[in-house]
Image (cartoon, rainbow, N blue to C red; front, side, top):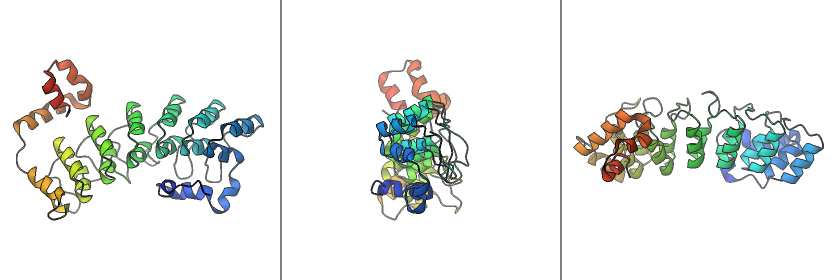
Length: 286
């Protein structure tokens, strides 16, 4: 099918996404599925009026709502939901419509699903919407999920924390926003920290941001290596890490201490301290 994009081919749980559209599996997809995925709203409404069950699923338990969200078609998703589509339907691969909305980067679909009762965090054994949003650099989707009480440090068995995934895929906007919202800077995947991931990916910009937020240069992973030992010799990452060795400045230590005391409320609570504007901006990394 020509409308299968390269991005969808490369998506995680690709056996679900590609298998949906190729080979014999196409035969068990209804016209409702096709209309939803392609965003043909009038056709979708007509099919529903003709009696098509909005919760009809394929052999892999893919619903039309899954398809509408994967295509980022909020109007189609709304019609399906208003006609009784199951908002938390799960495929055989653990995919929910919310995951698909994060895959497509549709903040409108994410908001719509949450309004209709979608659970933003179903369990560690299922595909994680926030990890998918971060992996693809869909910062707005990620922010919506965090605002709806998704654990910002959710530790997924395959992917680690959202911050770790953002560093692995070098999604700078997501890294910055996660840290701003209070993500734990040293929580990654097992003993591998976000700083390990940034060093491995040769991302000096991410390394500098993580260390600004207090990332430890001394943490060692399962191979007993610190971030510096993962950096390519004579690289910008190595230089950045070497510059951060030794004691931090008094100003930096004070900033980190204040942020630690305020916790994740720092972004909002610091304004109530009535600090001089330059000091407030310093604490908020602005």
